[in-house]
Length: 247
Image 1 (cartoon, rainbow, N blue to C red):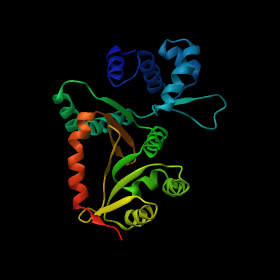
Image 2 (cartoon, rainbow, N blue to C red):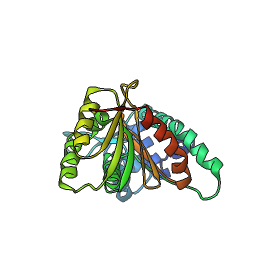
Image 3 (cartoon, rainbow, N blue to C red):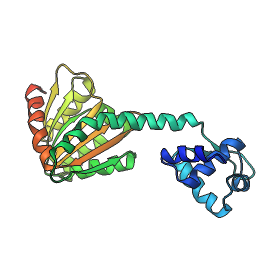
Image 4 (tube, helix red, strand yellow):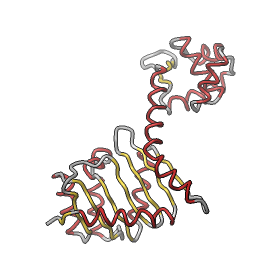
């Protein structure tokens, strides 16, 4: 097996054994555990564990309607696209990361989540805060978490969410209609008259900044830094002052 290819895959996040399994399947086209074990020169017992991890990450799929469990590697272009997505996400965060680096002193805590479950758990954490400031697209959020907004409004009415927040949204019918409902339950709401769509969400809460992308591959970055929050808050206030009241 080509050691250079193994090293290349290791540089993209594979372990050495995962790389062997993936390359074995590429060469085989498709194969069962016995085939993979022989080609990758690994014990059958470890193949099952490695396949489970590769399937979860989308690098291997199990073929349906086969008499024995048979597997196939995804096209290598999928790995390239994942790397491009990670690079794009990192590029979007780079200005903020540079700002943090230049501040010196106590380093911030940075959390990166890319599963819907992780993002949902983070939203629940924000909802249990005392105060927050959102610059958000509820239209995008509704596509990723259908029914969540109605659930939150109901929880607000029942007192299950203690959060008192300011919400700044884009100038589109869906977001403005949702904000009209939020206003009725005691939230402060405004819209940005010259912006019809927001591609990223920004939330200030406690001493944290949450940056969320709700595109096809959602992710959220949470930066915990009092210095950063103190720097970002005036920018949020300027945005709030430029917003228009929702009646």
